[in-house]
Length: 470
Image 1: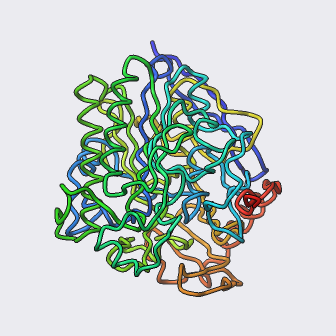
Image 2: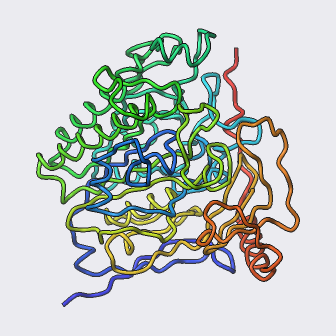
């Protein structure tokens, strides 16, 4: 006989912070703790994978994940740029709650002194308490100084670069010339193991390959215990580099080469899990930190039919491809329900048998009913921040833009919309046709949701504007 078990989480309801009842069955609650691998790309657009419609970039391994698992078509990040998006994934909280977003600086830089506060609880820290082994591989970008490094946030090991691969630039040659000449030396980006710099400048031509080897080794090292690996690719953030084996691999040019090498990397992870007998014990999640960096022409990727890209709160900036794979556990198919990287924290902690922290507001929902096919999703809203300002809100299929700003085009101030622009994202995912005039009641519902959310935000110290003192 199967009994129902009730777990309590927390969310934002019409009356403020409310408990959310999360049901599971007794048999589900006693399953073995799953391993988790999150593969997080940098600036990959909604339209950049063959399983999401790209006609010339071939991604057979990610396509396999989608075919055997779930492809999410309404999946969002919590910010349209790197640092705040990564903070949201690891903590399950909008960056406005922990100072990891700012109107003065979009992300952390090499001269930044701030980072993810040690008071935040990450997925890694929570899983360590549950007996998991943990490793971070790849781009961090949540603070390169102590106490903001991966080892300060629950990870046992770290191998990767501490911030974006275009930082620490020391050669001011034209970008496209640098890439054509494979001048990785133009960017004095360090490669780190744990807290030590082991190579500078990092040879970016080899990063995808070396990251993959590190992850494969960690899977083999950790295989007798439950493990969590956060695998954050440096690419396809510009400058683009790929290994010799992938030069001219894709008909889509260097951008296609980079994505197809990432797809190869995914294949190596899946192959290792299968070879070690861990495939049915491991949830693998593949997604991106934000939309494509469109000004870089053919090096910038595509948001498909979605509007705009990285840096924008239009759909192309924050709706990202997402694929989840867990053989013999997931309900296979395309998921059109709303989800977010914010939801990964409560989902993973619940699957691991842990308790959701009750001393802070979490903005994520447990996705396991949708993953396992036991019930509907709980997410019905999404808040779209540009820096520390709330620009847009989605409730159900409707999205209202109170402010808009096209990414990276010299528009210094946002355009204010009163009444807000309104789009039905089911009918019009490209956000072309404003339907505000016909739906005043929808606008009022969204205004009420916005008011309740804003009232839940408590001002905190801005981490992105802290600078290293000379």
